[in-house]
Amino acid sequence: MGFLDVLRGKRTLRQPTEDRLFAMSTAVVPMQEGGLEPTGKAAMVFQPVGNTDFEAIVKDMEEVLQMTGDETGTTISSSDDAFGYRWMVLSDPEFEDLVVGLNAVNSALRDGGYADRVLAAVFPFRDAKGQPVKFIYNIKRAAYYPFVPKDGTAQARDNERELRLKAQLERDLPFEQDLGRWFPLWGAPI
Image 1 (cartoon, rainbow, N blue to C red):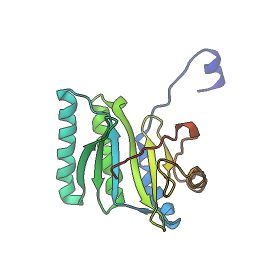
Image 2 (image 1 turned 180 degrees about the vertical axis):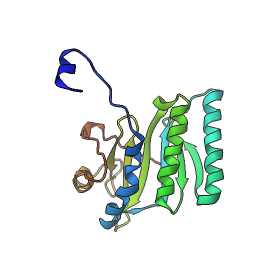
Image 3 (image 1 turned 30 degrees about the horizontal axis):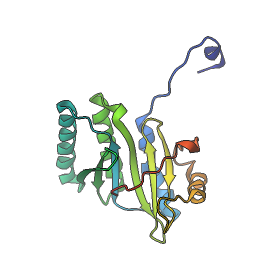
């Protein structure tokens, strides 16, 4: 959108692009070089709808992932949290399979007309000390941000570490620039 478009009152909304989710596939290499190891799990978080159409889409998606999982080794489980969100958790030793699987979940919900119900994709890692580091992909904003719980403190974040991770990896991942949108996901089942 250019300057003249602004003056004429034309506005276009940026649409999320799927290739931004796939950025994690290549970013995992510098993450590992920096001492972060994938846990072998990843999750898609969405708010379920109580209708048969939505449930059919989710059931079909789970069946497809289970069938392809027979070939790739991906397993799938789901659980609902206290906030009413469903966590569809994929487990696979191959990181690329996790990214592809989460994209399939996101695409199925979007194509079924439920894109507004999808919250985020979550990629958990562990640092050299075994501490959790999660990278959250906000689907609607098409951007990543780190979430690092402070060690030994209930619901406190290590903001300094999160900012360091952003500085180290922002060439590899499309980061959310508005720090006010770096929402924590406490109690994640992964």
